[in-house]
Structures are given as structure tokens and as C-alpha cells.
Length: 158
Length: 291
Image 1: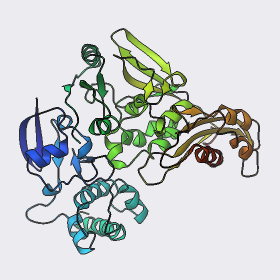
Image 2: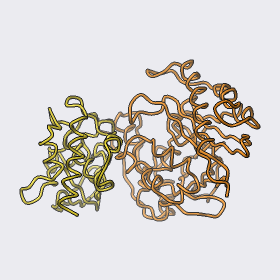
Image 3: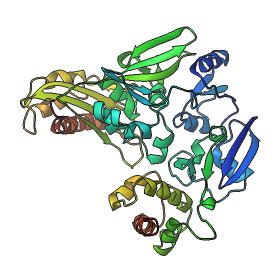
Image 4: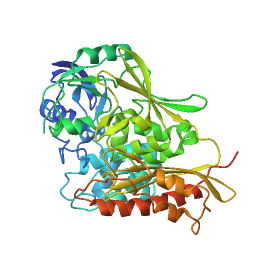
């Protein structure tokens, strides 16, 4: 067992974990953060994307021990004061989801993308989300949502 | 799947890392970003008894200008490599190829050294290492040694790293002015491995190709240097109607490409010729100013 301390969605945790425990299993099974789904389990689909110290990672490909001392943000931690994050709102408004399985990962990857590029072109959004697969809605509305969120965020945070 | 159990060590200095690895037995593996290793563990294709996590070892991460070469620390992430002004200025081929590795989330965790140490011939960076004659610096209890890329990739997922050795950094020689670069990658989906990839560097003068370097991705059990192309391209006229197409025809010579779901060997050989031609044309069109 290894002792880790992590901050997840603003709350500090200390836990003993097996070194082989994947971050996504730690989040779901230990902390009950089931907002982070497991999709492919092979680093492909991006459904389990979370922010690790502010940067998007696939949590099925990170050991919980590697996250020791880090700050993790899941989909459950992106809203604030009961207000959805602008990317969440835009996904809702643009109908950027159907079954919703890829959505938490899409939203976190989009938040990271917009941090880097506050006004991405359609092509830049497609490139930036190439590690996140959607198998039902398709990507048109997702791209539209990310660009709408970008616009929204530029207006509210000049 | 859940990986099999292993012991976990997280040293904070390279001396400690080397000692821990030496004491952890032959079945121990070095963990950096884990983006090649963890998928293998999860699929239970590998069963190391111990992981030595070098992710927080001081001094292994970052890029520095060392005069005639650039030193890329082994645990520098792909994302850091792509963003490095030193890499972009002095080794653009590394930046171009690294930007095509998987997807942004993978590039945030995967490391430059890890990709080379993993020695996957389908990885993008081994072919670049060959083409640029990189030199890999390794450390063990016996001391340090430097391994030229040409002698580093021994077989499929097998490198010249001996048990107990840790890759610490990679020297990328600066090629100087007059060179142009391109990495041409053919793959079926955005983050898939290259079916075939071609790393090309071209030096020309007054419209004549003077020197060419070509590394091939996924054309054998190791990355391959296309020496026949390099010889055939020397002295030809640059440009669409020059001799680059004929030189690129040699790209599959001496290769033994794998067969898998995506391509049979003859198709990979065809791709190597076509992609090499494209890579040479693009590299000669994107020449850096001869300052």
C-alpha cells in the first residue's frame, strides 16, 4: 500500500492505495465520483478525461500514486455556486450530446483547450478534441458548443 | 483490466533511481509518463514485479541548448517538447513529429524519453531519432554511457538499454542552416499509430539536393533508416519534377514491414515510397533560411 494525498474537486483526501490502482478507479470506486466514466480502458476514447493540475489527462492511464500531491478536477467539480460552467451550458444549448457517455471527457478536454486557445477555429477544436471519441451525436454540435462556450467566456472574462 | 500487482518506488534523484532499480530485480520496469507502459500492464501483456517511477526525479525534465546540440531530458513530456522554443528553432523535425503523437491528453503525460526507451517501431519518435542521429544518454550503477540512435533500437520493443540502465536524456544534434524538415504520417484515425510514417530532412543549395536523411516508422521490427533513398537523392534537382520521386522509389528497399489489420507488407512498401516522396517534397519546400 502507498499513501497518497490528492485534492479532488476542491476537497483534500488522504488514502492508502495499491500501487496498481488506476486514477479512474480511485475516483469512481473510492471517492464515489462516478461522473467520470470508463469507456475503452485503452487510452483511446477520452471518456475518463479529468484535469490533473489543470491539464487534461486520461485517468485510465494514470496510476493513483502518480497523482499523489496533485489537484484533480472531474466533471463534478467544474460548476461553481450552483452555476454550470460555460462549456456545460453550451453543450446543453447546442445539443452536443445524445447518450452523454463521452460528455464529461469532452467538456474537460474542451476546458483545457479553451485555456490554451480562447478563440479556436473549427479545425482547432477538432484537433484539440481528437483524443475524445463520440459514437452517437457526432462532432458537429460538439464543435459548435465549444466555439459558443469560447465566445461566452470571452464576453464574461475580458 | 486491472494491472497485476507490483511494488512501487518513487525516487527523487537519479542516483537514488539507479540504486532502487538495481535492487528491484530483473523484472523491474522504469515508469515515466506511463503512456506506453500502463496500457501494456492493463492489457496484462507485461508483468513487472516493480515499477521505478522516475516522473519526479530532479533534472530529467526540460530542454536545454548545449551549443552544437539540444539536450531533451528523458521525462520531458511531448507537450513540453512541442512548445519548447529551443526545439522549434533547432530541431523542428522533432517538434513536427511529436505534434502528431496520439492526442493532446496523451501528449500531456507521455514523455520523449519514454517513447524512445519503449522502442516501438510504430512510434513516431524512434524514426526521427535515427534520421537525426540522436545520442541517448543512460545511467546505471556502473556510471554513464552514450548510445547512438543507430545502435539503440535492437528489435521490436527491445532497446540497447541493459537491465539497471535508465535513459536520462537525449542529445539532438543541430543540423545548421539550409535544412528543411517534414514528418509525413499515414494513419486511419486521428490518434492511431502510423500505418507508415516518414521523417525527412533535406539540405539543398541553389535548387540542388545536397543531403537527405530519411527515417521510416513501422516498416520493420525496428525503425529503419532509408539509406538507399538518401544516396539516390544526393545531387538531384529539388522540386516536383526533379529526381526526388525516383529517389523515393527506393524507400522500401531492405525493409521487412509487419502485416496487421491495417496493412499488409506490400501495401506498407507502397506507402513508404509514396509518403517518402511527399515528405521529401515538403521538407525541401520548408527550408529554413540559409543564415
